[in-house]
Length: 270
Image 1 (cartoon, rainbow, N blue to C red):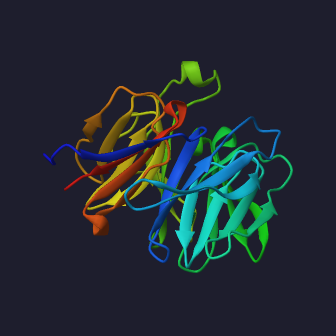
Image 2: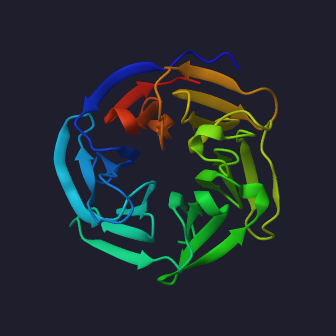
């Protein structure tokens, strides 16, 4: 592909385990999940950032239990928490939570389809849940989804990335993960690009493939549908998490770095 390396635009510190960042054109702002504690408490919150990276409101919304992935549609922020799918009205900051069924382990990545269905991944259980008509239910569970993390709706398919086999813990992931595609109608799973290429967290669509964040290596990796993947950025930082890519915003890539408590914005031209 031979794309230029992303150029850093700004970085903002002061978060508490930031895990995901999404942009809302209606409010012209970014929204960041702050995990802020373990899975038992409801101390997680959402920060609001201006376009230049300055913090507009540190605690725009509160009372979330381990908020992780985010997606935005029609003025609503959707958040995957450890035990629910939450919505945040971006006009008011009002939070509504839809509990996941008993046995759900860790909802993580999330995205919204055009028909309003919300899909969320359960990383530790190799599962995808769906929020439809106010109810969260199991949509798909399969060994091929072991270590599933980021998810994107792309027309009639879902694109997901995996961290890899987590059965022996995060320190012993083997084999490492990859990207897959799932036909929404048939739920058939197939490979997307090459296999066993990274310990991936976030994923977003890009021209000719996807842009994935390698959590362990602090990398951004372009995975084409055909051909070899390309590392476009290698920072060496641990915990690149659920980034988002906005080509319409001059190629903006915004990345939360969870363990460094920082959010970094880059410009990337494909």
